[in-house]
Length: 292
Image 1: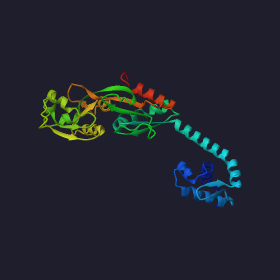
Image 2 (image 1 turned 30 degrees about the horizontal axis):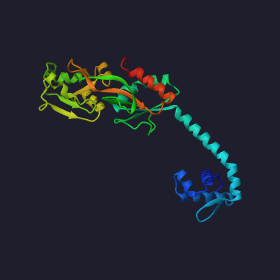
Image 3 (image 1 turned 30 degrees about the vertical axis):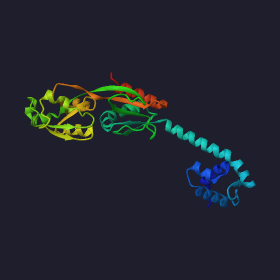
Image 4 (image 1 turned 45 degrees about the horizontal axis):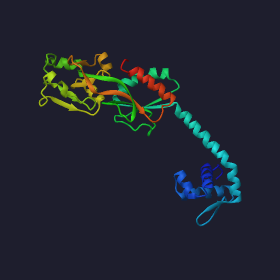
């Protein structure tokens, strides 16, 4: 083997510092046998014995000690520079967890603006329908639907969500009786974001026992089905904003209710945000805040 055995050199440095294959293995998250194997590889490559192995201990030979003193400072410099480069590359990346429908309907249309405004920030979105453990997977911030702020997090309320039943114009053409207030032949589409159809039953004269329903676990699916004329979606004006503006959806009734959940931006209360994350945070507050 002619190439420099860098892995073996790293293992040797740790073993030389600890004078224990077992302790070195714990630091390197490998087995003592793996450490011993790498040391033997390096000894064979160098053609010298680096350790004297005793029953319960190891110690450096004179050549091993001389070699360690010469390479240890350089190895530490390599490790330090490598970690610095890693931090530099990570410091420009901001990972933001967002609900899937919000990502598709609200964030994606804003990406050209984000790229133009923050050309040096690598914004990485992670579609996450459920709350995620911030920081554990590299996520610094998350946009979440919550009924109340989480006391364990720093929470910024972005906006209340105003919901109303929405349908496609084609559905009203196929069911003209709905325009006159007869909704008995329609299908109510339920999703987990706004499980509040019961608030509209009396107002719309709906018999909960007789009306047809369809249940899905994603608001994006609910809105898509409504646009296709499959039924009535209980939707908020944020997620349905583009569909309303383009006429793909229209309100079924002129009555709006504030949803139990509001939209929040959250991040860890214990660890400060990176400078790049702070800029993305301010942009989110500016773009989706109550007064946007």
